[in-house]
Length: 131
Image (cartoon, one colour):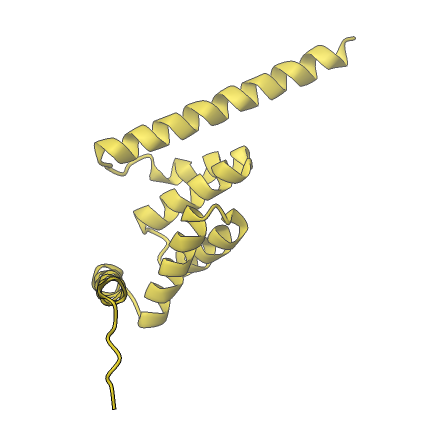
């Protein structure tokens, strides 16, 4: 009987997946199911499935209310969905947290964009009330 050879790319993908899951399990406080739920919420976020990401991050934040990364991703999910007031409300919880330069750049960019959009919509609604 001839043995079937597994391509190197399949082996590599399997190893990378195991390493990522192991890293997630080690770095996320909580149970295996919480780590898996975080991984699913992250995947939904990166695939621009923001309703699913929001649901996952909100659920996790009920158990880990002080988790900085979950709060940030939840706020950014609302931002990317266009729900600016909700996003700003959530991101305001992070005012005393410290961030890396890249995280600060992401947050500042998102907050500036939301404030500009909200200011434009306020200006637009005010100008249309009087005409």
